[in-house]
Amino acid sequence: MTDVELRPYSDDDLDLLRRANTPELMEQMGGVETDEQVIARHERYLRLQREGSAHQFRIVIPGHPEGVGMTGYWHRDEGGEPVLEGGWSVEAEYRGRGIAPAAVAAMLEWARAAGETLPLHAYPRVDNPASNGVCRKAGFTLLGELDFEIRPGLVLHTNDWVYDLGAPRSA
Ligand SMILES: CC(C)(COP(=O)(O)OP(=O)(O)OC[C@H]1O[C@@H](n2cnc3c(N)ncnc32)[C@H](O)[C@@H]1OP(=O)(O)O)[C@@H](O)C(=O)NCCC(=O)NCCS
Image (cartoon, rainbow, N blue to C red; front, side, top):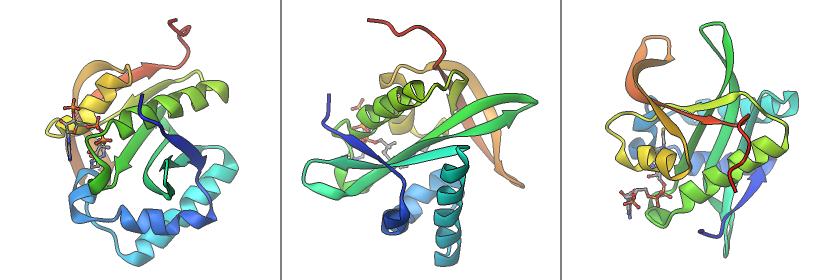
């Protein structure tokens, strides 16, 4: 498995978030943000982390302590049911080396160790083969397709993948 380490999101991660704010990457999440929006998101991540309702991580690989991407999960209400949702991104020059699947596997382990038992969903767009591949490689189960409103007025056609954190670990 690719050698990755997760560092809980911290004050130092604003640059990481800025580097992730590229058109190509943000197209998957609703479009590029202004620097003000990125700063607001940074502060939101720090606050939600303190409150325990969202956990973002810097993905570190050997020789790159500054981080090469991010992964995280957060609590969400799905039609009255509490669930977890996960997300991830890897900077363009580091893709195709299995970094995201290894980081997501580590994030699932972290969540399990933190006592999370709710199902963890991921909603990659159906036309995002790399991210659907990450779900498959990290052991998620495909439930089907759905139209996902990522913010008011913006609906993406996505797959719904789920990972059962409450299931006993297979050996
Ligand atoms: C999705 C993403 C996190 C995958 O990260 P990764 O570390 O490259 O993951 P992998 O190494 O497993 O590669 C995934 C797939 O990307 C494709 N890929 C391979 N080399 C690649 C490269 N140099 N550049 C881009 N994609 C490549 C391959 O199809 C690969 O699958 P395969 O190994 O089964 O053939 C990354 O592509 C990304 O950040 N994309 C933009 C943001 C995004 O879509 N986030 C998810 C939103 S739901």
